[in-house]
Length: 184
Image (cartoon, rainbow, N blue to C red):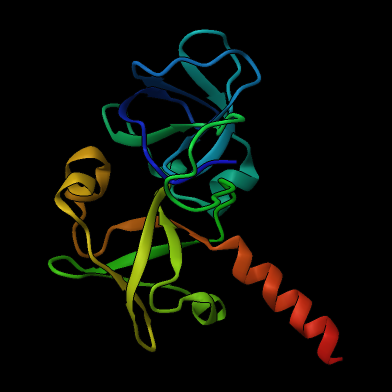
């Protein structure tokens, strides 16, 4: 589990479509979970950040488009006693969205089947960053990005048309399922 509070922006050292290696100060033991642009990956080597990426992950996220030198948001898994500064983030990307426009606020388009989960003042993770939804419309949602988030994550480099990993608030999904079970 993660919080959506990015600890570091690393750089892709290499990616051959299967093995992703990231240059960063963050270290992980073999078997540790690390969120890379919001995608929960398992470290396959001790020390440096190296991960094996499977077809399922490539088909559901933006990781397949990564190239050497690309920046990525990094967050090690939450440990017992760590503060939950963002919201509960699983690292299980629900879909790839697209940046509609940058500025104040930043607008994202999302697939129709997921739009019901976006609510004003609700939570969403964009490339692993915990954000508060500022507005919703028929095509997606908007967020306001504070200067710290722009500087401490990759979101400061967003441009219209960019693809991003979106993770819906898991509490909204559980609530929907529980309500549906009690209505039937």
